[in-house]
Image: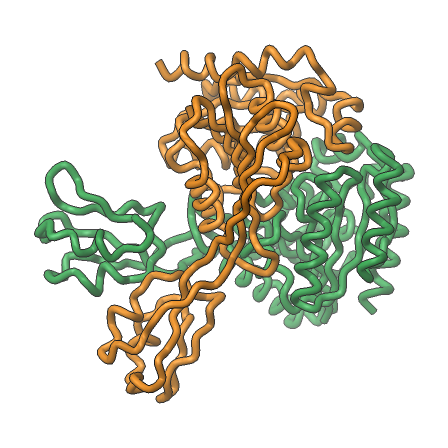
Length: 290
Length: 280
């Protein structure tokens, strides 16, 4: 089974629009949306949710006011500055600051700290017109997005094995941090969608370095290439110099927004030059995967 | 005043808006790049080289002469950063949250701390505007964006206006970037993805209790669902930036929005005052 992950470094380069097209063209893949912070792929694929699961990860501290003696040892030992004194002289935990380490539970001399499991979001097993889809929603202002990403990937791979499918297509998050690392480690191929801007180039270089760091093969697509043809050529040259194959270019095209408004992928809606370029790129991706 | 520029979705124009606000300021100002995974502010602000400091986190080191292999530290660690199989524990630094719990529970005083670099913070000055530019940058391969964001914010000095360029999303890096600011501007675009991620960003700000307004970028593209959503939910739209290919081209070369559309300079200069008025 192969795992293809689409990332970008910079946000808004067209990652999700292109992932949606790949899902349509692959026809027989399991689809995973690992951009759990701001998941958008479902708006193109209209998944029918078959099962909803809670995502429980780690714990969160909570001080029982009636038992707190106000000694303050918890606040002194908390390295996340998540505990402070209330107006009544008792101590309270800021749930957004708490990382669930358990130090306050350990040091409280009167055992006044509860430590329940933390409900961090939900994940879904769904069906789309292109195949099964695993996606998730991280709770607002919650932590552990990396762990939720790992869970979505694991469930998608499991589903592929169960159904005898040989490909998982993963829509990754922007950036180079925790959720991106959780999305790409151990993948078969990373496809980087960039744009011909200085920011796009700068961020592409950082994700190429990240893929190198984890020894994952990478390839690059330049979206909106005609905004700056010179920059596009420079980006492709830079990628090639780093051993990353440029797979093709997609023009700046308002048809992407139009198809997004209709809740469909571009390749279903159009047979214009952008859609044709994506089909050609997909064939190259497929050959690389095999 | 500290204004954070944030968004749910990436690529909506956070950096474009943050930079335009900073360079248009009528008072001494600084720009803090908190998008440490992909910091792009310096592409537009071009600060002259200043000082750079490494940001480190502390991870445990085991003194094997003192360690009795009791395993308490490994049992305590919620992040599986210590593993003991009847031996002195192995440390997995990339999983460590630096909580200090292992040291607290160790009965043999066998744990000390060492610094592991996770990124850097640089401080410079934009040569054209005199703007102070602070940039946090996560080391590639590190997972720990929040400590780098915290260090970048700590490097800000006490100037009349501080603009913080936040990372995208709704989780820990965003929370770290916006915590303690006076006001947040949420940048979006009028597309289904833009609207969906705006609703997540709005929920996040409400959860954190932070006042905010919305900036609609490429306002004449897409559809009117973002406008309708803001109207129906009584959300203030402080600015609409028109879509233009010229803006996209100037941006691609590292030019600022106010270079592409100079008439917006005055609009951006007045935004901090307008926010002050809204805060009462």
